Image (cartoon, rainbow, N blue to C red):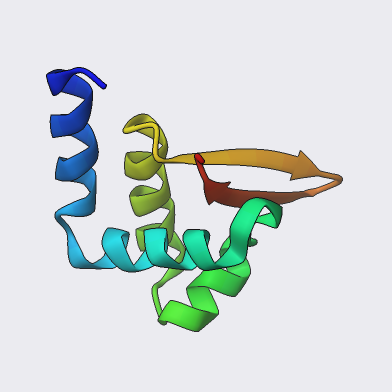
Length: 77
C-alpha cells in the first residue's frame, strides 16, 4: 500500500460514523449489507448515509453490488 492510499483510507475512517459503518461491513462479511438496514441500525438519515458511503467507496474501503433493485455494500477485503 502506498502512502497516498493509506492517508486517504485513514482519513475516511477518521470520522466516527464512517468508522462505525466500516465495522458493520466487517461484521456483515462478504454478503454485505443493504443501506436501508444500515440506516436503521445506526440511526443515520439516508442522505447522510449516502454521503458517508460515497466517502468510503472513494477511499477504496467498500464495494457495492447490485442485486435486482437492491444494493449491498461490503468491506473491500
